[in-house]
Amino acid sequence: MIFWLIVFIVSLALLIKSADWLILGAEKIGLALGLSSFSVGMIIVSLGTSFPELAASLTATLRGVNDFAVANTVGSNIANILLVVGLSAVIGGKIMVTKSIIDLDLPLLTLATVLLLVVLSNGQIVFLEAVLLLAAYLVYAVYSVSLRESNVNKENLNLLPTREMRKRHILLIEKYKDKRMKITSKDLVMLILGMAGLALASKYLVDSVIILSEIFSISTGIIAVTMVALGTSLPELFVSIRAVIQKRSEMALGNIFGSNVFNSLVVVGIPGLFSTLKVDQQTFSIGLPIMALVTLCFVISGISRKIHNWEGGLYLILYLFFIIKIFELI
Image 1 (cartoon, rainbow, N blue to C red):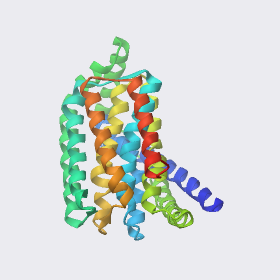
Image 2 (image 1 turned 90 degrees about the vertical axis):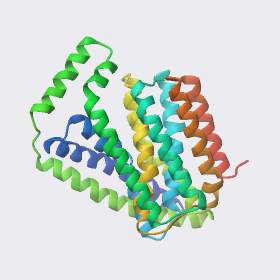
Image 3 (image 1 turned 30 degrees about the vertical axis):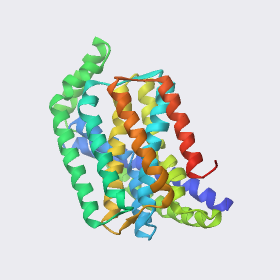
Image 4 (image 1 turned 180 degrees about the vertical axis):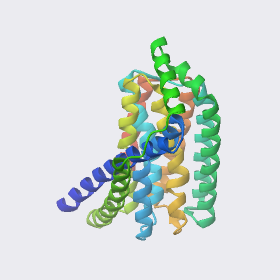
């Protein structure tokens, strides 16, 4: 048991680090290919924090563990809101919610969550439903990037508190607008190492989950919705806390919105192309209702324009309650 717990922890750490390597390489390559700095941040950096969930879920599905992907997605979405946003609000005192988030991100997150809940209402995801989820994500990505790209200068300038910071931001935009970065061998190496690390770490993570579920006589879904989901949400936690400390609330929340939409539509959509995905009983009866509830609470908090530290504390208490209920400790 100790050996496989160590394998689980090491493979989870490698999974997260490999995603970081992949992001570093892909970010510079994207800039070199002519993508704007905003599009690179929106597409690569925000989605890169969800690569661990995707890699683990796809590997598990290909190994025949069909209840892993949905459980990991549900657990990650819950952890992102209750743990990441909760801890960020407590540390930062409060998180300000911008008008662009209310107008664009809140409705899109709501639609993605509702679509996932509808698809999972019968306890499984079949091929055509997976295609629907992926098509929905494609529409979301194109719409979101194109809309934000047209307003990126104005939106970002309004978020910066001082004239000096606004000047630096304008210089940064001009730098990437008029000059392309060059692709170096280091960038390619980071990209390759990231992809290889994700593949290797995912294999051993899934192996450890299967064996630990047998040792503790619990379903792989329960481990995925708690331990794996918590571990794969660490990148979102680090990014959001750093953003809150730097007083960049939109980045902290945007990271969560992008990650949860990606989880809901892609992390279950891609594995669903290869096999029918199942939902274990605990995830269906406890995880899905709590995900729906906390997403609703998150949306309501967002509409109020501020997420206070007391709300963050309440989120953390709810996350502890979720863990207790899923393991039936009370």
